Image (cartoon, rainbow, N blue to C red):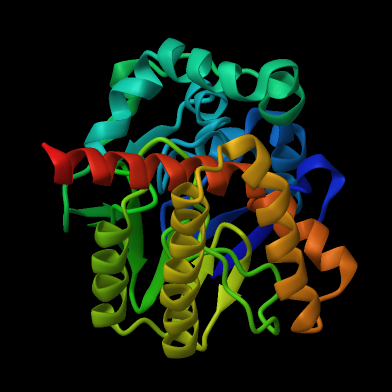
Length: 300
């Protein structure tokens, strides 16, 4: 059985999820959320019939704070943490990760994400592409799916996938919108499109999105994600060609996205949820960085 845990990020429902999967050897947790929501995670684990110390295996899709920020606290309780090889070293030595994030979030860093402590290397397990981890009667297979982040893994259990951010943001399953979260530093549109092909080829019956929950209309969902990723990417490129910097582009982009959602009948409450799960200023920064790096490669 899979249970979706709503971590109530910033007091907003359906912004960040974690998932408990029952196995014959106890529960596994997919995603930890940020440490700022750790008290909520603990409550949700207990309401699922477990204690935090019962979580012996934590599978992270990638190391961004909203997905992995509380993993250290679970490791302290005895959990093994499974992560992409490129991400493991940052969890063992998070100083660079934290300092980089603090430059972005400044005084909001602690409010948004909370603390992040090192995870002992003995508690970290780097997982290779297509490697299978067996926990009791459950097999968890890793698919390296870069594009949103170079250290991104989609986890497969049977015909169900836990897609982190690579399958996008869809706050409500009934919403006919899928947003691509595009934060810096390593958005790569070409890699992302290849990862969508990987997911499509697996023919999942369901995807579990960290932002947010279960979705089953896979073909439409992935087509919409591809379409919107290209639309957003090209929109940002046009602003750059006009000579605009991120500071003036962010409010325009936020208004552009909000208008799209309103035109589709999305409620104002849901628009706030989308913005909490996928802040506009992060996508502007990430896509501008992508285009600048792409131009530099082409000119070299």
